[in-house]
Length: 79
Image (cartoon, rainbow, N blue to C red; front, side, top):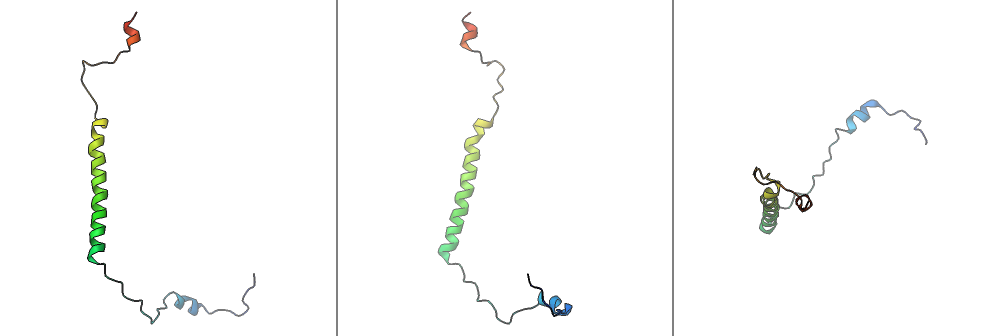
């Protein structure tokens, strides 16, 4: 690559990160009522899905602690 031959003053480099443009960006558009309602509905749908998956998954995660019930295979009984 080619190198610059003239030196760049350090003050110029230091001021480069503080440079502010005098052109302001356009203001953000306000969200309409339909957009806000859609965001709420999406959030509620996600939360309801998570809660429903936990509620439906709880029976599968619970441990059956009944002491009288033990599993045995039928092959062990047929001797």
